Amino acid sequence: MADELFVYGLQPVRETLRAGRGVERAYLSREGGPMGEIVALLKKAGVPVDRVDEARMNALLPREDGRTVNHQGVALRLSAVEYCAVDDILAAAQAKGEDPFLILLDGVTDPHNVGAILRSAEAMGAHGVVLPKRRSAGVNETAYRASSGAAAHILVARVTNLVSAMEELKGKGVWLVGTAAEADPCYQTNLTGPIALCIGSEGDGMSRLVRQTCDFMTGIPLSGRTGSLNASCAAAVLIYEVARQRGVRA
Image 1 (spheres, helix red, strand yellow):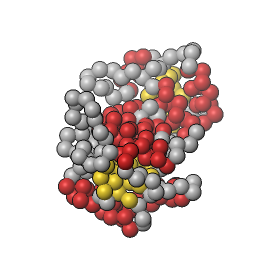
Image 2 (tube, rainbow, N blue to C red):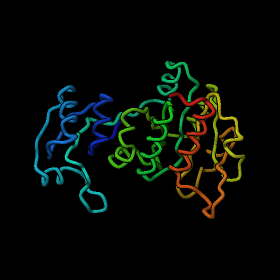
Image 3 (cartoon, rainbow, N blue to C red):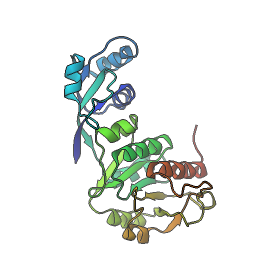
Image 4 (tube, rainbow, N blue to C red):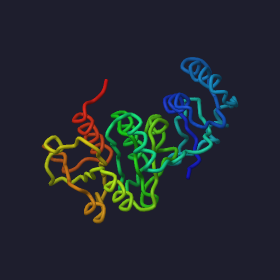
């Protein structure tokens, strides 16, 4: 299944073109500077280009909080964002000869957080991210832009029932790791081997069933007065710790 979207801004557009995603059309409202590289990538990919004025560009794109977005003079219309199957993520890990490393998002409804998590996951070598169809943001324009183009490079699966997907992963030898403030610190937890890291929602954390389905829990020790981290910040810390224990590749 898929969600239609526009991608805009220099970095997301650049990464989308490099990834070879299905771009239907490009829109340019500015010339010169970094736009030369974008034009070259568009020509290489054979993408049709419409040159428009700023008013047309602003009208074309969605608004954020009632304001025009910072498109930086370039936008792409994608045919769709394609969601894969969880098995596709496992197959990608196998193709690389690596233990699977997945990120499971349980009720993360802010697309900015979803995008930031996609960026961290892709940057640190995770093989894919799994989202539930309900109570979760999808990969829309906001998430795509927040990922700074990383959404073009990482596999994303969307499942009807997250707990069922977790049980299937268990049956295929993947360890399910939940997150909780009271759990042993992540740096004292063995996070090597086939891992699916579960990140809870911004307000309530992991749901009861997801928590019960996890094999074990890990946490992030905090020393300041703030009692918790934003979902995407916590995810970034834990994703890096998994990557560190697995051996971060240069």
